[in-house]
Structure formats: structure tokens, C-alpha cells
Length: 420
Image (cartoon, rainbow, N blue to C red; front, top):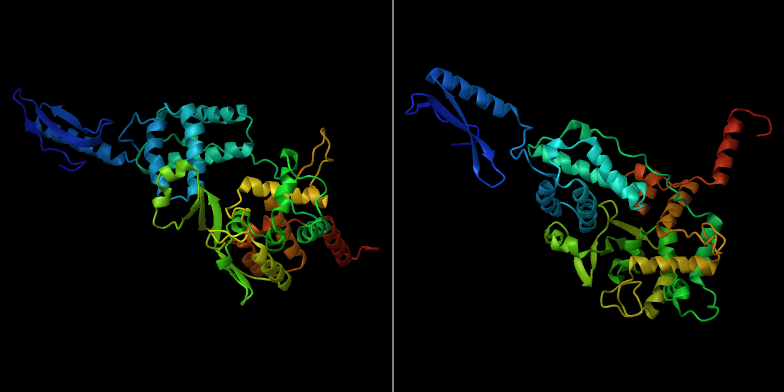
């Protein structure tokens, strides 16, 4: 008997008429059946029709009415492991196992209320994490509950309708042009290190001097993402044609993502390098791009190739032992460059007012802004940056004070304001 079909009414030994209909499965994996009885065959048939109509119209009614958030998370995460890239899956899995399940895991999905969601928000706030964490966890919860809705489970509309917290102020901006020039000159021709670079306090400077300046040209001139530079191989560079193919990146893939089977997906091309590090495709299809090498960059890169430590992974900017730099240590080297160049985002370098450093991704913001200043056509900027649309590019562009002054002066001239 198929789900939703009913048996024909039959008369029991006690004289009453009975019929049954399948209504799915229990949490123990057993078939669930709904019975109707009546004094007459006609009345029993009518009750059976009503039951079938009720079941068929209740598409949003869960076949497991007591399904908890944890039970659904256990079913949903393996599905997402077949759909997401390792980094995305690891983040989603953390949201579920660290915040959602510990706080509302025992709640039944159909009983969830906005108060339950706010309970998760409060736990994240108590941990002292940024609002972005709350926003991302909320997005994961919504995606998870919408998936449950598709599967036929009842999800209260009030929970799905809850607005996200307001986004925090984004303090990322482009590095001023003069500072970019100073950083580039320092990267290309660093001064002789003053004093001993050993010891934990000098770690950033030490790492900077162990990294070739072309690493920072790739960031400040081409806007390469951190993973794209760290995973760049010599096979991606064609000196004869004067181009470099940005189609791979270095990525740390945590054990939980590998255990979930994310790397088993045949649509994801990941090559193991060492430890937890893999060479994987770039962020998106649009990010796969071919960039022309300026003569100065090609010359410096050829010179570096002759001095580059031998890498079994063919890396362009490896550690001294040939292995890949971690994101953390590469960040330290970037901070070391700023220390040596005397360029910082803020602070005075004292105990009470320590230096505020530009993060590597802000170099990318700078490239987008400088391309805008040069009035480069939008399609060209998109191609260089590896963005999927102009909307993405605009998020990276920041007009500086001089640009704003020129724009306002132009407006004043158009409006024929005296002295413009």
C-alpha cells in the first residue's frame, strides 16, 4: 500500500467497519498507520476520505512531529557536506555544533520561538564575539530550518521571519597612495635589518625578511588574495608570454571537513600538499583569471626564481624549507613590512596605544580604488580583481579626500558657483 492510499473498509467481528491509511514513519523507523471506524460501511468510507484529504493537504506537517533541532542537524550536515567547499562547510558545521545545538538542540522544531533564536544571540554575545558571528550563525540557522521546511517539517513562520541584527561598521579601507608607494619600495629594496631579529618580539620583522618583495607586489599591484599568493606555483607563470594564471589557491582544510567527506566530492578538485594544506580552486569561477605581468614585476620575479628555496610543491613564495606559509605567519610578515616601512593604519606604537596594522585584504581594497582613480573601465577592473560583478568591485573601492575634493569642485563648476 503506497503512502497516502487507504485500505478498503471491512467489517470487524464486532460488527463495526474499519479502514486504515499510511501516514509515514515513526522516529524508530516503523510505519505509522491511522485507523478510522464507523457503524456503517458508508460512514467508514467517508471518514477514510476525510483522513486522506487531511493528510494530503498537510504537506507542511512533519512526518516526525517530535523532531528536535539536534536530530535534524545530524541529518542535514551530511547533506551539506556534499554541496559545500571545505572552508564553507567547516564554518557552517561550527555554527551548528558550537552555537545552535548546545543552546536549542533539544527543542522541537515545530515548537521553536523567537525567544529560542535570541538565546543563541545571547550566548554569542556572552562569549565576546563580534556581531558578524551572530549574523552568520543566524543565516545558518535560517538555511537549516528552510531545508527542514522543504522536507515537510513544520517550522514556525515567526522564527523564519526574524530580521538579522544590523551589520557592524566595516572599518576596512584602502591604504593611502603615498603609503602604498612606501610599502612597495620597502618590499622591493628593504633596508638592512637593524639588530638581532631573533626572539618572539621580532618575529614579524624576521618573517618579512624571509619573504621576497614580489610577494607584496602581487598583493599591492595585482590585488591577489592571500590564499592565491600563498598557493601560487611556478607552473602558473609564463615568462615567455608575460602572464600569470590565477586559478588555484592555498587552503587550510580542518580535520572536521575532511572527516565529513567534503574532499570526496568529485566536483571539487583539491590536491594535498602537506599536513592540513591543500591546493584548491580559487574562490569562484570569476576569480579564475589570466593577468599580464608588468616588465618590472616579471624581472623581479625571474630574479627571485634563481634564489627561491626549492619547494617540492613548486611554490613561488615558500618557506625556507620549501613548505607553504600559513595565513597567520604570512600576516605576521605583512605586519613586519609595515614596521620596517614605518607605515601603519593607526596607533603610536606605545603600550597604551599599540600599532594598528593594515590587514592583507586591505591591499586588495587599495588596488580597486587606484584602478578607479585611473578611470579604468569597469569590465577591466572586474577582470583584474577576479570579481563576479561590478557590485562586488564597488564594495572594494573607496574615494579618498582628494577624489572627493575634485568631484565637489567639478560639481561647483557645473553649478557656476563663483570661485569653484
